[in-house]
Image (cartoon, rainbow, N blue to C red):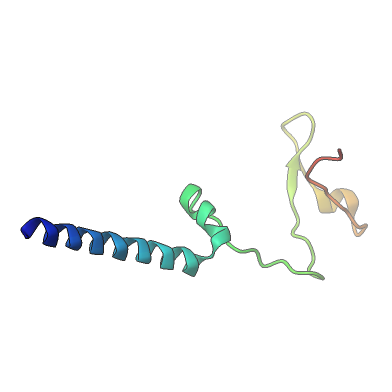
Length: 86
């Protein structure tokens, strides 16, 4: 009798934990679950269509000199594509 009560109690606690973890995953969003678990620093970006891109600075090919893209391209449009061309 006591074993069955303990078994039911443990199953209830396990079910409650699964429900809480599922509710938390739904609350933060499925796309953010992986990032939350791995990086814990992801956040939704604020950029939208029509916003100006943020200015960035990169190292030149010598590896020492920092170059601002705005200084190099001025007001001309710039498209940076990250990915494969194949």
